[in-house]
Length: 582
Image (cartoon, rainbow, N blue to C red; front, side, top):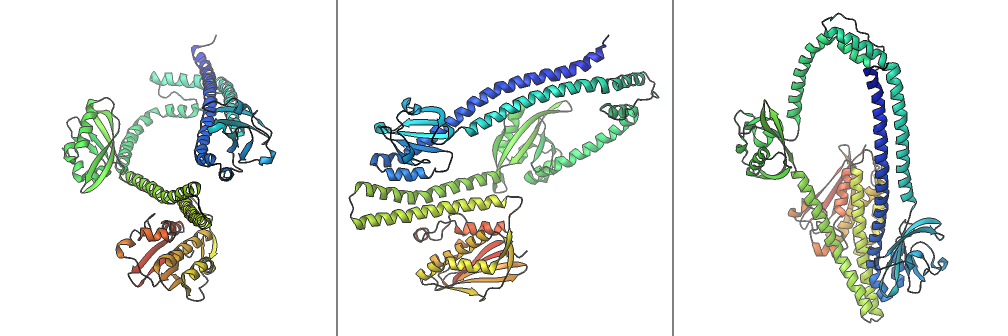
């Protein structure tokens, strides 16, 4: 006859099996929801991309400028996203991936025939691309149709992986339940019966009862613990004392201020971070929350005693003239039968400063992009609406070329700066050995034409440059030198620009010096900020993006170096780039 204890051993693996079955059923249900949501998300993304491209090509389509539309579509060549422009009769007039000569009339395509005011989706095999595609066709004006498509291979792969994971989970659960059942009955149950008998004997006062300690298995430690029960009780008291000391150490080493506040406002406990924030007096007996001189914090603590649940709140705090932003979290707890509040304060000042920096950066980028875009749009409108002679068209062409290059330079500098910042946070850098004298010579060659046009003589100090070697990224270091040399050529007005190289205190010292107009002292501290310009209009006219010196700064930091500037009005400027030699 099966004992009650054996029923428990049997119930455990059965419970595991039931839980696995329920979990798998839930996973299948969630998989269906995931599959539906995944497809809907892909369709919505395709719809948004199509509407965006429709807005981009709308003006060109109305003007009949198919060449411009094809140039827009060329951006997507080789990418998963594919676009097709279909004329009212069904002829394909623009395509991002396939040659137009290979494309038949598309009037009979299912997604085109079923199109409505909001567009239509269709999944089918494309003989042109030799792949299954998700299509979305949307109507444009006067019977034109824009069609976008994505390969479904990625969707099918993602859904297949989820389905495979569910099947593997079911198999693993069944194997686990069976293995657990066999293990419990064949290995654990006999030792458990013996251990239970010994524990009952000890509970009845026979402390000398021998304990059957298994050689291995999960009950070995339990058996050993029962065998030394009396000694462990005494050791536990000492352990609790040590844990209390460890908790006090941890409590005081937390970077976030912690306060334990009584209902009457007394601060019962505080850590070192709280003393740094509110002063050493916060740790003295009788210090009340009202003495923090922060009305918002006082009101928040009072609300925490009144409300069972209270969400975190951002609280302004003036730390001796320095404004701070604190995120307060209150947790209700009992201490010696009394309700108390454990108050955790997180300093958000640096985070808010970073958010402000990000907002300023986005605003600056928007402002910098707006000017060339406005010039390009106005010039395009002039070419479209105003009849021009050859000279006028050439003038408009020059404007478009100049503003497009300016916009391209700005985008390239932004991408370069973002890539450098990502590499700064990487665990390792793929640096190589670089000869700085050769790199400096290459940088001079790159700006030689600009120097000739400006009538500026490029010099080296000494001549020839010494053969110094560092580990780094040759492209980034060359870009930094080109930026410094280009700045000197554009803005200094100096008859000469000198590139220097020497070794000093274990560093390679690269200098770019001019004898031009110089920079006022009040600008020097901000010179390496993004988009900071000493002369805004003149810098833009000379082709600067405002990011060149910021790139130099981050390249120096990436190489564990530094960059600084010295300048005197009317006498010239010297930029110094320091890179460790090894």
